[in-house]
Image 1: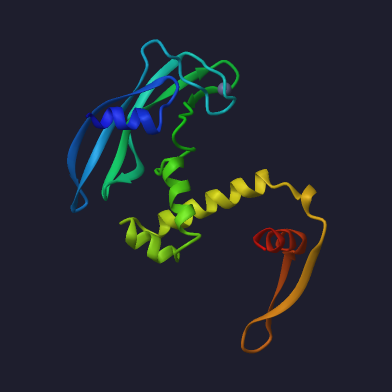
Image 2 (image 1 turned 90 degrees about the vertical axis):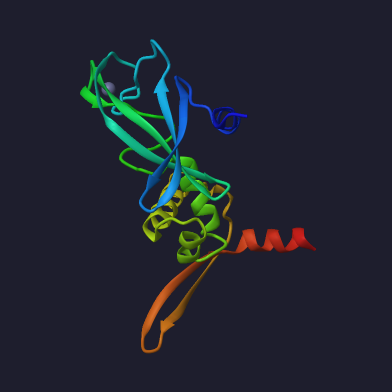
Length: 189
Ligand SMILES: [Zn+2]
């Protein structure tokens, strides 16, 4: 089975296809690189307004880290196109697998941030052979997503406490949601 068919099973990107996969020695380890290319005749999406527009030029190839496969680091390689957008001028295209200048794919960011709920950030970095910084960025992304999508309408009761953070007079204010805990306790009974 080709790596390509595994990837097409786990994640496809509208308007793009996976190309060849090959091994490469990168920063002291052997990694798997997979080329991504736009579908023929597909027009790039402007990162400014989200509309498709005519291509302007193509930038140098970038690497995007994806979820490791069997302990092997996986990178997507893609040369971003620039869009000649009617509204925004010349803009880099938007790609579905990563946000802005992030070199981690969104899927890998979610993967790391989910593990960071179970292990310390340092442990996550060690286990997945990545940097603490990558774990930090991933958690930041997940928190930002959570803040944008949070729904406070179900919160009916909160508690507020002041707790000592360390010896001396350093305090933090802790706000917690009582109704949700109550609901969870009841469900587990
Ligand atoms: Zn635009």
